[in-house]
Length: 183
Image 1 (spheres, rainbow, N blue to C red):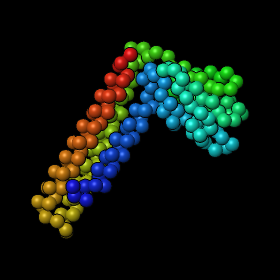
Image 2: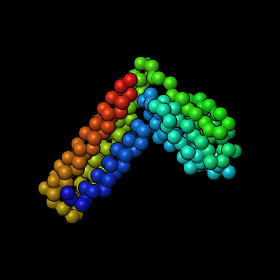
Image 3: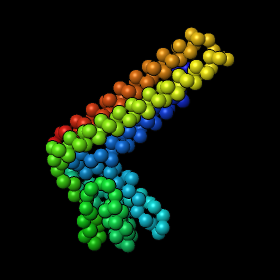
Image 4: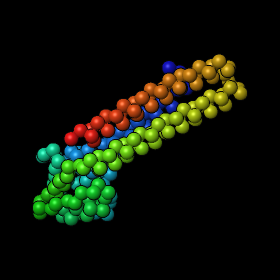
């Protein structure tokens, strides 16, 4: 592959990685500790990820427990979860916090599938924008450094890379949809 394509492929991979991390935060009826990744706790004045102030465990399929290393952090963790958008009320038993994930309703599953499709489409748009930026950069090179044929070859190669990433986005979305629909 031409080294002039590499930066664009790297950007496309970052878009796909971002999509995967977004999908990790969508709960599919099972307890997934990644749902807590974006939640920050006020730890002595510093916003800190929950995973850095306590032990996060999944003892059962639909339960996450958070055991803080300092008991004083219980209230802070509970407050951070309540103000987040995960939609689960934490249970505090004095030594740890339990998050119980309810079964998803059919309606909620359909909403989540729509959300998955929307995020996939946004990722595809980002990939296509990267392709457009690459093509524009190649056209600018035409005026000075390379021939029309080389530009055409670069654009064709960039299109193949774009197609590869669009396919990966579709596969990722299909896998997440299947996970949500499967009861």
